[in-house]
Length: 319
Ligand code: NDP
Image (cartoon, rainbow, N blue to C red):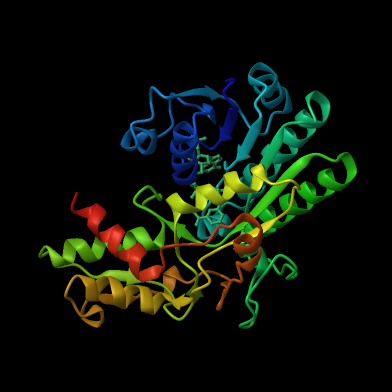
């Protein structure tokens, strides 16, 4: 049987590593792209014992010639574009990097596939940040975008590019509009990582304070390893469509903090300080999701909700 080939841009990141693992287990030949594999942090791939199971190339996503050359060389069946600056907070400090890394890579892939091979199926990593504040209405695939950060503006632009190429050139492209998803492989700057790692140190006896920004914001937190299956399922469908991927459960950041400390037998109020320097210039107050389309058409549903995610994050700190 001929093995399918997948090319993952952003393979060294959280989602890229879990997706590579998922596809290796599905018997794909897995290829990855990093901006510079000699300088990249490959600890995520190492922690999943993937180094010898995937082939990784270096290419600059923002340069068309490099992207086209790589796709031409591999001629994958599926491409996943997960690369880019993924921090909402950082995007206020580095808006140009945020826009370039999230938009130029996908337009280069769309152009390359239009020129080389219309049969390649493409996944784009969209974001729930595009919805902005929905005032309590659960966002689905028809909810209008109101992006509130350079990151969300970049993701929204890419979403419309994907739509445009799908309509204009009949390429098979899907945007996964993913809500927050966590794991031990998330970068250290992620607030969930900061909360769990600091709380675990405090539980072990350190005398430090956990400094946080706004606690009244609400988010939908899921478990990253199961979200990558949804990405793959989108590319196995009969029709290319966009899907909201989330647990459907919304909690405040205060709920998250409370649950972390509670699972460690501590009272969060004794250990947390609010630092206004950590407030973002603009933040989404309430972000809620309606993932029913994925449930109905992809048969995908999140098994793990916030409390399960927290338990697994805490467990990983003691492994
Ligand atoms: P990560 O930050 O873990 O990985 C992204 C990868 O992109 C990095 O490993 C890096 O790989 C590459 N990259 C390219 N350009 C840049 C840049 N300018 N700055 C930093 N890294 C860059 O992200 P995730 O795996 O968590 O997310 C995958 C995609 O899904 C991203 O596009 C993200 O925005 C999106 N997303 C993530 C959500 C989440 O909750 N995790 C929610 C919704 C969307 P290298 O250095 O090897 O090139």
